Length: 78
Image (cartoon, rainbow, N blue to C red):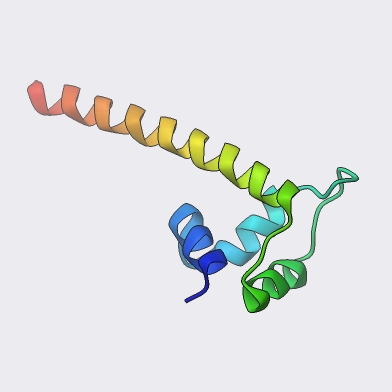
């Protein structure tokens, strides 16, 4: 499993390639093709702009998960 796949599957699950293609924008602000993500996966490399965006996405996901944990803890206490 490539590092690109590990990152993608941890952020998005089994449909990670399509999800990354849908979420990221290239340096010109345009969407990217799923084939581009597949190429990154095969080469196990990411451009810096994609790394930067994925870091921000991961941070947002972390925040969302922490909020879900807090809500679950509140429910449990009831």
